Length: 249
Image (cartoon, rainbow, N blue to C red):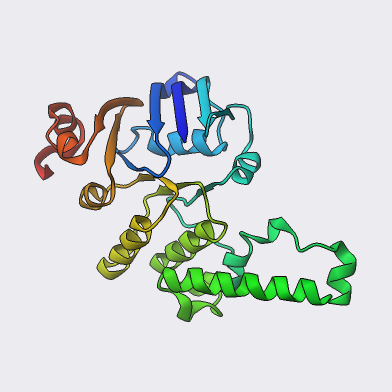
């Protein structure tokens, strides 16, 4: 589902990524770990189209999207969360989730909006029902009518997850998904991820969460892949222990 070949990103004389190659199969959950500055978020920016690589190619489901922007990739089913939750603060939690599906339109154009046609009302009702079901799945159904700006960071992160799931993504990228979550919220997050059919790529500093949630782990250091494999094997890799895990391994 995701194919990255020889991707490099330079910021002036700094190589944020260098010769990165990565393939993630359809339906696979893959974790990306590494020390601060390893290039993890830059890699996500390249996959989602927020940053064009200096070198290399990006393919989604066999399609070369290296030159495609973020909107085009989103239309292909790519969704993402961010290190710092990006929610619409002046919208309610429910409306944040609905925003993810409204791009499909409702049929009938402006006339249908003004006249309140029955078909348009039925579609709006179905979307609201679906959005509430997603909120329930993420454990925040009770917050549906709260404004996102009023929520603590952990709850905002769950809102962002719900919004990402609302349009049934084919590829989901999660950047530091458990940051700001308490133990119960992190467990719920893990349960939601485990139940997804989408291809999932997640960046996370909580090594325990990664090892439990992912079938495979990729380790970046100084913009290069230094390990790639099952969690148990990666944990014991000498290069990984030196670069990142250290005594915690």
